[in-house]
Image 1 (tube, rainbow, N blue to C red):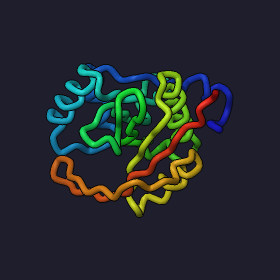
Image 2: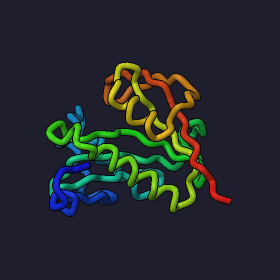
Image 3: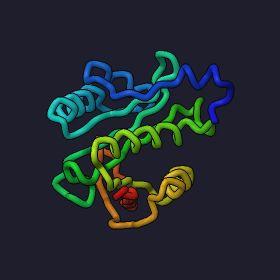
Image 4: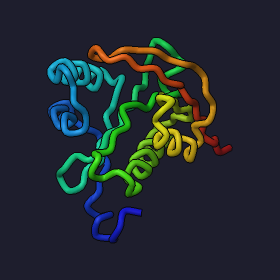
Amino acid sequence: MFGSSTQVKMMSVRKLKSTELSLLTTLFKYKDVNDMIAENTKNIENGTTDIFALFCDDKLIGEFRVKYISEDIRFAEKDKRAYLYAFRIHKNYQGKGLGTHLLESVIDELQRNGYFEFTVGVEDDNFQAHYIYKKFGFVHPIARIKEAYQGDHYEYVLLLKKAEIES
């Protein structure tokens, strides 16, 4: 999936600490980096969000954010439904199965922590994300969402995946 077995050993997924948030600027061009850092620091520290990061050695090459609590339970509901967003893999590492590895790692961790429903938002023209999400069972559209972040406007479909619950 990642090439040689040596490369696999260099990959790791872990949660970012609030002191590491400036690393995210290598994956996305924020209009206001300080605002992004302040917002995510608050969310990490109050337990509403985690940012899972994919590293190759010490280099950040991917991220996936998880929101555990939302005012709109279509997105997230504590200990039941988690909203997965800001799924990014550095352009130099795309097409190598690393996004699939990151998504799988995040879902596995969430399931170990008792989450059994997951939502993702995906824009209509993001065919690569649609393909990956469908592979993972995100096939139930539950809402169309319009929102803005740092002056940019987004419209996307919110997809739901329910995990198989073992009895």
